[in-house]
Amino acid sequence: MAFKSGFVSIVGRPNVGKSTLLNRFTGEKIAIMSDKPQTTRNTIKAIDTGEDYQMIFIDTPGIHKPRTKLGDYMVNVALDTLNEVDLVLFLVEATDSKPGAGDLYIAEQLKQVKTPVFCLINKIDLVEKEQILPVISAYKELMEFSQIIPISALEYESAELVKKEIKKVLPEGPKYFPEDMITDQPEKVIAAEIIREKILQLVSDEVPHGVGVEVITFKSRDDKDIVNIQANIYCEKKTHKGILIGKEGSMLKKIGSLARVDIERLLGTKVFLELWVKVKDDWRNNDLMLKTLGYKK
Image (cartoon, rainbow, N blue to C red; front, top):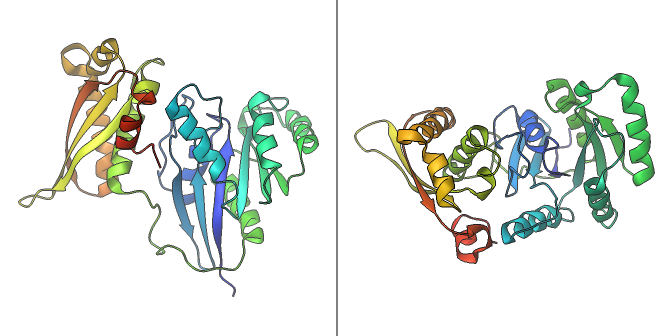
């Protein structure tokens, strides 16, 4: 039996369900999720290995019109993956009757690559069945896709259907990663992302996009089965710092408590987590800060 392997990029507008689909493909929580757009800031690889295949899925930041240097970086990261993979999954929403401006822009970028493209029409669970056919027709007119597949990223069956079709187009190739490996992200990086996810979940709309997380200590204690993690949460305004800390530290405690549970699940051990909040004015346009937080190549 021939072994097939390859890299698959997931692209789309912010908040169309790319991270949800990525996690569904592997059955593990690799990418953080939020109902707020522009949650993903870097490419994240999730690895799914079967008996005769290995699929390396790459979740990319949502392609949008950038307003900061961080935004520029995120969009460039997403576009850079298009020519470096074996297949592109273009994720759109069934709840939109026709392609929006963001979808049209991404389609224009996709027309310039030789990579095969599947159009995945996500969130079919939110619309009536008769609403899906007109959406499929609208995307057929947009460009020539290798396949158009209606899905719900929340459902296991959809992920398995897409993987079955992906396997048909992947080339024969090597096993790029060990079969028990599910992501190339260091544990330290995932821990920082989990902390940021809890901020996205708990804090009002204005604050999270101006938040960056840097894990400054990540080490196991010699005397106990416990990992010490210390992290800085950077925000852009003093008022945001007050919101993140909360009355008598209540919000910061809540962020830390929720993050610790997920990090312990990830590491399979107890975690002692300490968080500090620091103000860095306009850090999203600061090259040094972007590099410090891993947002510079």
